[in-house]
Image (cartoon, rainbow, N blue to C red; front, top):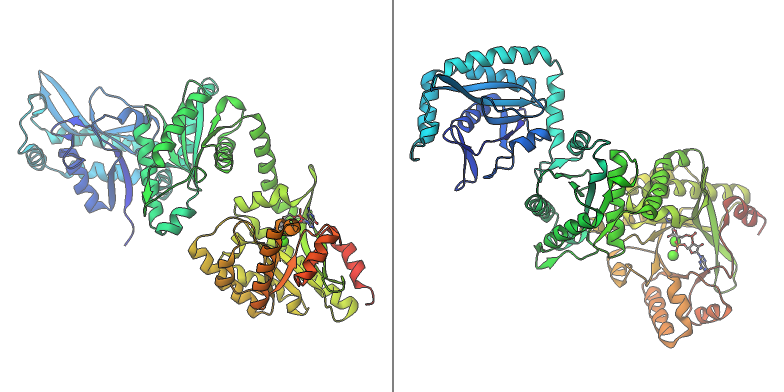
Amino acid sequence: MQDSILIYVAGNPELYPLEYYDADTESYQGAIPALLADFAASHGYEIVYYEPGRADNRAGLAEKMQVDVISGVVSGESFENTAGTLTLFAADGDGDTAEYGLAFTSTAPESFIGELSAYAVERSTADVTAELLASSAGEPARDEYLLPVTAGLGAALCLAVCALIAVLRRGSKRRRAADLERRIDPCTGLLNQFGLERAFRETVNEGNRALYYMLCFHFELGHIERVSGPGEIPRFQRFAADVLRRRAGNGEIMARGNNGDFFVLRRDTGADAARGWALGALGEIRTYTYSGAQLSGRDASAGVYPLAAKQHDHEQILYHARQCAMAAGREDLNAKICGAEQCHICEEERELLADLEHGLEYGEFQLHIQFFVSAEDFSITGGEALSRWQHPRRGLLGPDRFIPLLEREGRIDRLDLYNLDKACAFLQRLRDLRGGNYFYISCNFSRLSFSRPELADRCREIIERYDFPRSELIIEITESGLISPNAAEQMSANLAAIRALGVQVMFDDFGMGYSTFHDLQDFPMDGLKLDKSLVDNLGTERGRVIADGIIRTGHRLGLAVLAEGVEQEWQVDELKKLHCDLLQGYLFSVPIPAGEAMERVSGPR
Ligand code: C2E
Ligand code: CA
Ligand code: CA
C-alpha cells in the first residue's frame, strides 16, 4: 500500500460549529475537520492540523507557506500566498450569502485539490446538514453561526475555481507531494531545512535583512544516547521544539536543520537581545532530564548570526550560525555572537571543506613520515604517516588546520583511507626496492572513522591491492571525542576484522583524554602509544609511577609500548629504565616527506 500524502492545515479556532478548537481533546472539531477526515480516509491523504491551539495562526502560517490549506475561511477574508479557494458551506443571512470554506496555498498538491473538490460536489445537502448537526450536538447553540446550509451552491462554486486552478498549475503531482513532505520535519513539526530556506527567501529581503538574526541551537546528543539509548533523542528534540515554539513571539521562523540543529530566524532589536533570547531558550531546554541526567553547557549551545554582518546567502548564514554555536559549546560559552573573527575562521573552514575532494584527487595531500626507533639500539624500525595539505591558496597546512574540522564534519574517513592507500603503496615499494621490509608504518585513524560499519571492508579492499607483509602495517586509533556504545561495538568489530588480516592496531595518545584502561578491556589491540604529556612528566616521581604502571600493564597484556614526543636525552633514559619498546620524537626525527623517508630506508641494510 502506498503511504498517504500529508496535508497540513491551518485551522480556524473560532468558527463554531464549522471549525473550532476543542480544549479537551486539544484538537480541531466541527463540520470542516469531519469532512476533511472523511475525505482523507477514503482518498489516501492524512490531514494534520498545524499547531492547533486557541490562537488563530492562519495568517502567519499562510505567509510562511507552512501549510497547504487555510481552513475556516469566511467570504471576504484573504490570506497571502493562496492560489485558490473551495467553498464548502454557504449561509443566507440578512439578504447576503456568506460562504465558508478553504483556501489552498501553492504547496497543496493538485491531485488533492481536484479530488477534494469532486468529493465536495458529491455530497448532498442532507449529508452536510447531518454533519453540521452532529458537530454542534451537545454544544450550546451560538446564534451567529447557526446556518441554513445550501451545500449545492458551494459545490458549484468550487468546481469553477478548481477548474481554473488545474489549468493554472501543471506541475507534476509527484513532485508536489514530495515537495510537501520535504518541507516539514516529521519529528518536531517545525520546518525542515528545505522549508526554512523557502521561508527565509520569502521573509528576508535587502530592505529588512539588518533586522534579522539567525540563531542556531546545537546539541551534542552523544551523552543522551549513551545514557538513555537512541530512542531518547527524538523525545528530546520534540521537547526542544516545544520550548522554542512556546517562547516564540510573532513571526519567528523555526526549523530543524539537516544535521539535527535547530534554527530560529528572528527579528530583534540587536545581537545582544537575540543572544538573550537564545540564552533563555537554552536554559529551558537544558532542564530536560533523561535517566536523571541533564545536558551540560558544552553539550547545548547557541550561536547568533546577525544578518547585517555580511552579505552572505542563506546557506552561508546557516553554516556560520552553526559554526558559531559549536564554537560556543567548545568554549563553554552557552551562546555566542558571530563576529568578524569568527566569520574569518568559518570562511577558511568552508573553503577547506569545499576543497577537500579536489585536494584528494589532485594529490595536494602529502604523506610525511616521522620515524620511530627501537629503545634498545635506536635503530629505525618504522614511521608514523602524518598528513600535510599543500593548499593552492593557503599554502602548506598542518593537520591541526584540517583534521579537527574534518572530524567535526564527519568527513575524516575520506582522508584516513586515502592515507592508508599511500602507506600501503609505500610498504610495497619498499619491499620492491630492498626485499624483506622489517619496517613498520602506522596510519592514523580517527575513532569516528573506525566506528563506521563499512570501515573494515574499505580497509581490506585497499590493503588487498598491495603486496607487503601485513604485520608491517599498523593502524593507530586517535582521539576524536567520545563515541556512543553502539559505535564502540562497531569499532570493536572493525578492529577484530582488521587484525584478522594480520594488520596491527595501536591506541594513540594513551593516558590522555579519552583513551583509558577501559579500552584495554574492550578493544583487541597490539600496542599503545604513551601520550607526550606523560613523557613530559617523567621528571617527577608521580609521572614516573604513572608511566611505569601503563607500560607494565601493556606488557602484561602482550602489547608493545611506544613513547611519543621524546625531545630530551633524560626522557630516553627514563623510558629505557621503564622498558618502553619504541621511541618517537624530535630527538630522533621530525616528520619528513614520504619520498625522503623512502630514500633513507630503502638503501642496503
Ligand atoms: P599524533 O598522532 O599524536 O601525531 C604526532 C604529532 O606530534 C605530529 O604532529 C608530530 O609532528 C608531533 N610530534 C612528533 N614528535 C614530537 C616531539 O618530539 N615534540 C612535539 N612537540 N611534537 C612532536 P602533526 O603531524 O602536526 O599531527 C598532529 C595530529 O594530527 C596527529 O597527532 C594526529 O592525531 C593528527 N593526524 C595527522 N595526520 C592524520 C591523518 O591522516 N588522519 C588522522 N585521523 N589524524 C591525523
Ligand atoms: Ca598518531
Ligand atoms: Ca599521538
